[in-house]
Image (cartoon, rainbow, N blue to C red):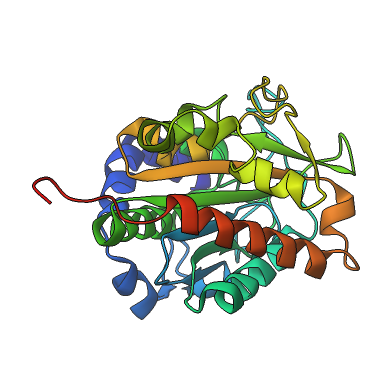
Length: 294
């Protein structure tokens, strides 16, 4: 039966996923309990944390959760390519908690709530930073996958409508260098609107997001900021889907944190520093552009 549903899902998913992106964020939050194919009640709020915000800042953290999804088997990746953009089940330890701490510190700095969509489930069951055909295998995981991306799409849409610009930061962990934070913008593609409005220095200068972080003592890559991004950390499915190169109003940046930033003892300081840099970034780049005729 699982195999039959899986084959049926492959045929129907594109339509279902497109429909999910049209569901308002408020509607998804109002009815979190959903019944998957098995008939088991699934509380989507137990799988994905969602916060409706007021600022043009959206926080995503797809790989930090540690929960199981009821009646969903771990992914096996059979027949899938492995590697940076393929099948992987490793968890980004500490990034769920870091993303929540960043949201708290951003509110302290700016007086209003950022948006966030944060996974609570383990990556071995579902990978939100991959296309659907790689991101899950069990049909009962589809609802969770669609909830994450439907919530993120709604957040981006509402931010764009309210502010006509915005920043999505996608928080990850990496084991290549514990002391480094890597930038992922597909070498500037996912921040096209930012650069059109403010010039290339907004991406590669001292007042860019990573320039602001380096100025606060972080070891960042690339540095110089106009260098090429590290292979494997150039930006995954989330920034590739919602970034401004897709004709959205949202510039998207993936942050790959080493363990020196996500560990339990360092997490709060990381959140405070990132929030401080985001406040400076928002003052410079997240003011709504004038409308035509103004």
